[in-house]
Structures are given as C-alpha cells and as structure tokens.
Length: 391
Image (cartoon, rainbow, N blue to C red; front, side):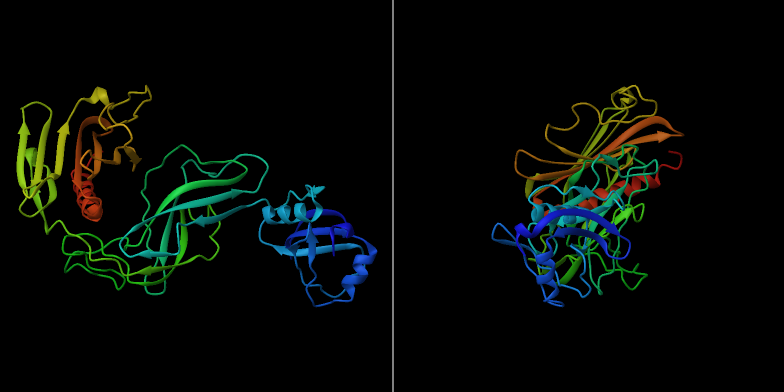
C-alpha cells in the first residue's frame, strides 16, 4: 500500500486496543489487503516502509486500524509519516507520561558510577506539574537481578519546588551505581540480602552479571515504569584503598573516620570557630578537613524567608556541584587545583527550630577513592544527626 492509497489518518485511544492509528484508504487498497489476511502489509511512504502491520480478518470498510501502539507520541509519529502531515484528529483521552533511560553503553565495570539520563515524555500539548501533593517527587535508577534485590532509600525531607514537565521529552541527569546500596559492619549482618563492608568501610561492588535498570519513585507510582533495559556488569579492577578507617576525635570533640596513620592538626582560637585537619603523611594533597562555626547571619534567612537556610556566600569555589539533601544539609563536590576530588558536607544545626551553629567536613582524595570519601561523609552526617535531639 502506497501513499496514493491513503486519504487520511487520525489517532485514537481504545480501551481494548490502546493507542491506534485509523488510516482512511481507497477501496482498491482494502481489496488488496483483504487478499492477504494474517500476513503483513507494508505501508510505503517515499520508498520507505513506515509500518508493516498484520492484516486481521474482517476488513469491510475503508478505514484500516493499526494497533497497538505503546504511547500517544508513537501513534502521532506513525500517523504523520503515513499521511505526510500532522493527523487531522488526535484523541485527547488517556494522556499519560512515559519514561525511558539514555545510557552511555550497556556494559559497565563493577564499582563505578554511570552517568545516565532519565527521559520523561509529557504526551500532552501543555506544560504540566508532575506532583499532585505538596512535596517534590524523588526518583532513582538502580540495578537489580534475582540475586541482588532492589534497595532504594530516599531522604525524608519535603522540597516544595515542584517538577515542571514541558510537552515532549524532559531530560534529567541521574547517576546509576554499580555498587550495593548499603553494607554492614563485621558482626552486624542481620538479613540475607545484606553484604559486609570492605576493609576500609566502603560499600562493595556488585557481582558480575546481567541486571535490569529499574526506576523507583517517591511517592510510589508518580512515574510509569521503564521499558525493559538490561545491562551487563563486569568485574572491575581491585578497588584502591586509603587504608583502614578509624573513628578519630578532632577539635571540640568533632568525630570523623580517618585512615590509620594520618597526621592530625587542630585550630581553636577560642571563639565560635574551630578546625581539624588530618593529612596523609605520604601525600599532603590527600586530607580531611572539618570545622565548626556560628556566623548565623551568613546562612540563616539570608533571602528574607522565615526559617530558610542557605550556604554562606563564598563558602565554595565557583563551579562546585551542590546537592541539598534536606533543609539543613548540603552535599557538595568540586575538583581541587591538584586534581583531587573534594567531597564535602555543610550542616546547619538548629535548637528547637532556631539557628545554633554549623559544622562541615570535606575529604580530598583521588577520584578512584571516591567510595572512601562517601563512607567518611555519610558516617559524619549520621553521627551529627544523632547528636541533635531537638532540631
């Protein structure tokens, strides 16, 4: 069947068939199709096959229905290709979102982070807000298979800035890790799916094998599931290590996990601020810094909004990547002049809802030791949260 046989095309939604394209064709085309029941019929436009549906029995009129099509956008695309212009009618029923993921490949080394893109396709003609409740939706892309159960933990904070989806494809950067989500210290494993931490306290890599990429959301179901996406994880190189980590105490009793043998220096001028530094004696570019301070006016309600908290101006260099974990906690990362990666956290500490002080910690290590930096920062956050009974 060629373009000369096509007199029109429209897009409809059918409760049984899903998204369909109804093509108005010539009587001669119908007669030709009726002679090929249960066989594929090619629809050729500009010498290119744009569709090859199976001809079902019962064709009597001059409207041919092509179905099922997965999404409204796919149906519109097919109708446009067949007709050579936009279809005269597009059903407004069952307008939905669809999701997909863009990956830099399909094979990844265990223990690495993969930069992916979550694509949310808004199949309406207007911009829309994803959320229906007061809090911004959260999502994660994870790897799972029968031997590695899905495990996703979302922060409990409520960000009020909603997600605006423009018509068509909306792209969001997401990191997929080829490591386990969590690990347990020696002697504390309590569930069959828990794995022990590595000797330096870091999270171990996933075992080699095939995995499905799964989209998880909070609230559950705010986005449709991804189509099936399979990737292969290969054995990675032996993980570099900064050495065994031990919990050490710095100035003003601040505590951090520190590689054994690192040299400590402390600063405390007796005012509101203090500093603690641990340095690798074999490489002074590798270090851990922690600090305390007050300077409430630099971070409390600086935008005039009651109860708002922001990082102090000039605290981080230009170009630093900042992620707000919750109302009081900011994670950040940037590359130091020596090429090492700096991972850090800044935490505002409140007392019954009022500003008290702040603490910060940052780890400067080669990029290959990112998992060690993450372990140190996560433990620091956990310990500080435990010390704040009345936030």
